[in-house]
Amino acid sequence: MATVNFLKNFSMATLGATVIAIGMGGTAHALTVIDFQSLAQPGDGLSNQGFSYTEDGYTLTNIDQNEFVTFNTGESRYLGSTALINNTVNGTTILTKNDGAIFDLISIDLGELNEPFNSSTVTFVGTKADNSTISNIFSLDGVKGLQTFNFTDFTNLVSTTWLQVAPFHQFDNIVVSDNTTKSVPEPASLIGILGLGAFGITSVRKRKQQPAVKA
Ligand SMILES: [Ca+2]
Ligand SMILES: [Ca+2]
Ligand SMILES: [Ca+2]
Image (spheres, rainbow, N blue to C red):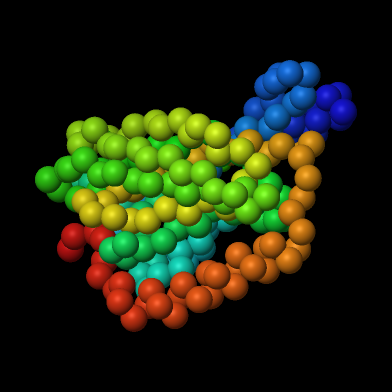
């Protein structure tokens, strides 16, 4: 019910969560921005951020050997806002919603990683609740700084996956839509996805160990 959703969104917004209610065909959608600002650190250098990061009910998982990292705010490659970096060459990042519910992916900010800054191409693959997949390919402008890319048809997702391919990127401000009017995938589908992830760890850890961030 629109009224109930509005009240829920209103109370979340009052609590400081980055949730906005917008009207879309009479249904209230809650937009959430994953901005990584809780990870910000002063000074130079990098901060290790572990293999998973959760914000606003969504989790980013790194299935490779090197932890996620962030540039501290005094680092020369810091892009003006704390962004997350998969620090494994060809490393895999997976975005899921914590309760296993489906979500829509609206946009993401991508920025160059190493100096001299080069144009990266990043391919995002979304897996939908019906097991079909969708991919979008974004090319960075090669100029230091974050750029917003809008997804096309990244709806009804159970996960989205992308790789840290040379010359590498950092990501920030992931905008997702929590559409509670849609169905929830079967638990078996989620177990299948986690199983694939576990297979990935075995093969990936043997051959992908180089850090993406230049020392
Ligand atoms: Ca947030
Ligand atoms: Ca940020
Ligand atoms: Ca750029």
